[in-house]
Length: 386
Image (cartoon, rainbow, N blue to C red):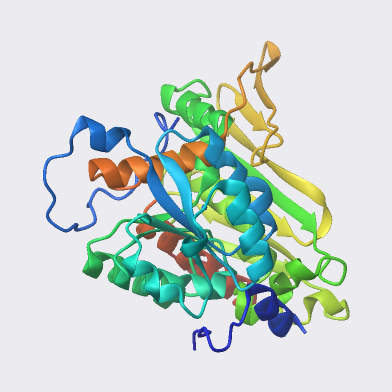
């Protein structure tokens, strides 16, 4: 049952109560465009204007990583804030030049339908709330950008897609790595055949979760709010990378889990999970996620001519690419880019130009469906077809 505004006086309160997502070479999304309301031909002035984004949830990621990126956007700007913390919202509204009348609580969120300054709602809440606020935003006549994982169940992902389709609004999942220059370069190299025929991928993502030290992170170890543990939170980076690097969809998964249930952090969610994805071409992707190891976010792609190593692969600001051949290793010289701004601008451009987002709801649904298959494989010890 979704959490309603009456149960959610503030995002901070919700977390306490529960604990007591440069695209030239990227993988294309589904071919079918989302249905849209009839629109007149887009003018040059229209495509050059900046669309207004309402940020729903003012936690650490939103305020420290994503919101500052708007300064580098060509087509997106912040025009509204949604929070259960009035003081924080007021302070941030002043900092970002948001009209005080465009600051909403979770209780009056639905009135955003009357705000013409808001074109897109960006949902930066715990995964269990993504479906509810996507549906409410679509009913309010707004396009939606949702953080990943898209939702905590396949059914909720489908509800999000259906709601936006019914309203004629765009739905995009915030897979920032698919807008990051090093990852885009890796995809391009693979497509050009620089590595030869792909054979294998290894991908690892881990961090030490500290719910008692960082209260705002406590929801991550609560199954109801997070949907799962390390796999849902960071293992999804390994999963999504394997998909966009191969350009294929896995046909079979196997998995093993190790969780110390005596550790109070893991009473409800998994810690370490290892999973293998088998792709139609024969490529095998060996992936891990963990909540009890020092930070790692890397992958290596093996071909019969060369390998490509990206470590870090999914960092916010720093990436390091190495290409290995029989002649030796070479460091790729690339310029870091603002993946957040690229992602936000892409969403805005899709609305302005009536295009299907590169990472639409269907992309998020695919990952969640595979994640559920991985959980089943880990639980049963058997191969699971996907």
